[in-house]
Image 1 (cartoon, helix red, strand yellow):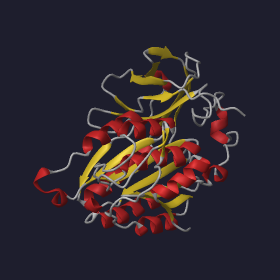
Image 2 (cartoon, helix red, strand yellow):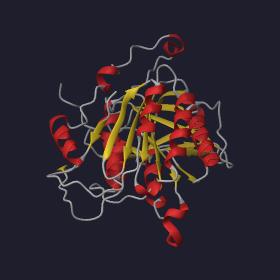
Image 3 (spheres, rainbow, N blue to C red):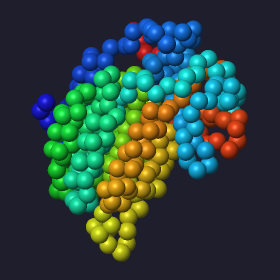
Image 4 (cartoon, rainbow, N blue to C red):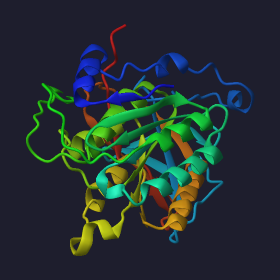
Amino acid sequence: MSKVHLTPRLATCLLAVTLGLTLSAAAQNPPSQPPSGDQAQSQEQPLETLKVNVDVVQLFFNVKDKRGALIPSLSKTDFDVFEDSKPQTIKYFKAESDLPLTLGILIDSSGSQQRVLEMEKEVGGSFLENILRPKDEAFVISFDVDINLLQDFTNSVSRLRKALNSATINAGGGVGCSSGPIGPQGPIPCSSSGPRGTALYDAVYLASHDELGKEVGRKAMILLTDGEDQGSRLKIKDAIEAAQKADAICYVLLIADRGFYGFGGYSGDSEMKKLTHETGGRVIEVGNKIDKLRQAFEQISQELRSQYNIGYTPSNAARDGSFRKVEIKPKQTEYKIQARSGYYAIPRREE
């Protein structure tokens, strides 16, 4: 597949026409057929995404003990669910590890990643080979001064590896344009003035809004980055909101070549912790060690394959676009829940 180079100018044209990257993923992933086999035994079936229908809120989450080990084999009686502090009735529960997974890999190709990019490509490719099953799909985006869709949704590991391997370091200056990505208030003006080097927040927004936002089911995004943003036109809060509206779990593998930063170090972990906490993922410190990167990918793989799935009909049925805070409380107080902090009650779309 040819590379789509999403420069700000190209992004403006594409987004203005389609409010997205003009991607074919929706056509490639039609709504799921009625469940069969073991799934058909459940009288209460979950909606695949609350963005399609907020009548049922669906949450994917992990349960861990005090040491961080995953806890399997729990039932719905082991949990209470609250929305805006009000108790909710659980309508659906399953310890599910085989639901289709839609995965986004976002790889930082800015100048700070010069000496770690090759190990990211190698280990990231192996991760995709190990985690993707026939019904799963993934895409690859690189980001630096621009945002590049290297590979759209596919199940082909060879295509995904090729896309990862095509990522190249770009630490050049910004490109002049009339407007930037579509943001919460419409196109974001941009100019060639000011430093631009790592459009991290813009990349998360575009991956969420234009890619994962059009998909259904289990969705996750893995960022390989040092967490430092320079030059995004959107803020971290915009990136978080887009990820939440896309129901995407965000993981950040914090990869930093310490030698690049010198004595001053780097400070990208703070905003990345906000992103992952709000979406149900987490930050994993990798540094520049390939063994740590392999371990981090293995941890993510285990978590994605060990998720619980809980669904409830919210007592607040209003579709007012507001953010609803959700809390899953285990009855075993020593257990820790890793889940997103809430959801947006998206108004129903007009047919």
